Image 1 (tube, helix red, strand yellow):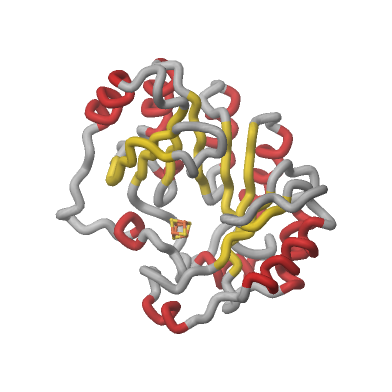
Image 2 (cartoon, helix red, strand yellow):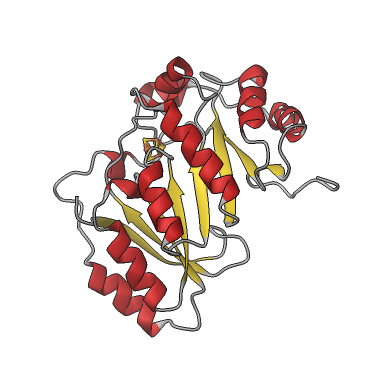
Length: 241
Ligand code: SF4
């Protein structure tokens, strides 16, 4: 699909650490995670306005020297055939680019890395990388082989990167977090983010209670034995980690 920009945040200080970034949201996703907080992007309605790429580029031109980089998020950006064109436009403005992805398209990821179109990659890891586990959380079957390929490619790219897992009690406990962390050996940063029972794709998830902070901290310790830079979203990095 051609690039469908369905959301644009002009400035953020938190989306890309240490940077003033703009955020572009592309619609559509090949997953159906029950806890997804972007149902409007996963299943966009016809009245959700498309923002012309020219409008975004025009804004970024005006803000040259102020905005450091752009986060391209979704949905799943790699579903868009126009993604490469968008990234080239951003790079032509001298901006740094971070891509958020679910990792299902390693072939395109490889092309974007080789073409020097990415400065940072953030990949969601939904579950231990086994077919059945992943299908349960992603809400659809996918190629775990492709996901593993994306993980290795990102780690070996030398680019700034982050892997992140939404820790939802319906799917993940200590064993699963440890399994995921083992897969991420060699990664520079692994972020655990608490499940939040708000605005979920599957309304039944609103009944699920998130893990308490102490439990998340325990998971961080468990994962931290296998992968460096393990932290909890929203908390300060622990000393010595
Ligand atoms: S949370 Fe899942 S369904 Fe939602 S955008 Fe991310 S990968 Fe797609």
